[in-house]
Amino acid sequence: MVNEVATQTAAPISYAVIFPGQGSQSVGMLADWAAQYPIVKATFDEASAALGFDLWAVCQGNENAASLDDTAYTQPALLTASMAIWRVLQDELPTPPTYLAGHSLGEYSALCAAGVLSLTDAVKLVHQRGRYMSAAMANQTGKMAAILGLEDLQVRQLCEQVVAANPAAIVSPANFNAVGQVVIAGNEMGVDLACQQVAALGKKSVVLKVSVPSHCQLMAPATQQLAAEFANVAFHAPSIPVIQNRHARAELDIAAIKQALVEQLNMPVLWSTTEQHLAEQQISFQIECGSGNVLTNLAKRQAQKIVTVATDKASQLAVIKQQFANYQ
Image (tube, rainbow, N blue to C red; front, side, top):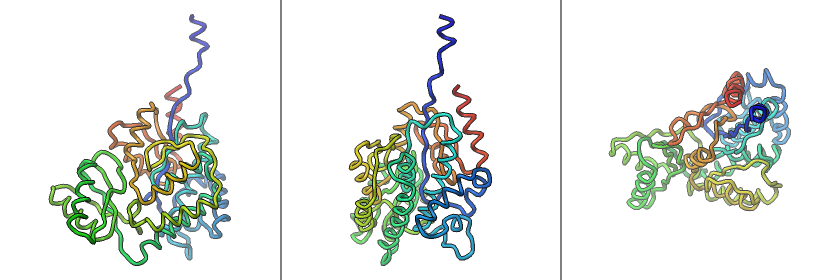
């Protein structure tokens, strides 16, 4: 019996990798990663070749480069940043993750990491996604705001009441992020009126600095254009399950993956449900793979908390490796 116990190997660690969306970008991002890991700049070079412009220059804020805050450039920049760090993790960590997930744009990063999309196809897709999103708002002004301190159902009902009382108003929940944090999106009138109602309830709203209102009906034209783009792109079966935003579940059928990806642009992101699903699957910890630490901060607000480590600095890799050591 003693010998049997001695020869048993520890069960492999079960962890998830989650990928951030827009709002995680910052000028100069990944400079420290690139200085230590050549594969980071090589990944950006690969993406730049596919896009026809220097994506690394955009990220570093080089003179004459496009703005990192223009959604058509933000999206491929963040996806490539996530994929560059993902490649480092693949080289440096002993086992692959059990699940992948991504918040909004981050879902494309997750699907790319799972081999559903190639990097070349993914960066071109999200570049077009950004263009279509901007075009959808060419003749109107949209807005997004984070609502703090209300339950999901309260926010949903509040938006419905605003729309019912004001036929020109458009507003609806866009991101169910965590307990007490729901992002709403719509036209300027709709979001402003909803925020006034939130204030009347004694709660707080924070207007987000975004160029377009994602995950609402205003994105319907972009959704249709994106669906047409998918017809020209090769999708493959995922090597790792990806929990998608639309239904907070992992689709295995390629047609279902495509459909969920199309629908997520004008439907809400079910992030808190995604995190709950990961917790129910006994995920030991999760890595936020990409620029910033938005999802790491959201993880602290979830009903079932999972230890989360961001990769906003290259030094965080040592912290991630220590997590593996803790489970040996």
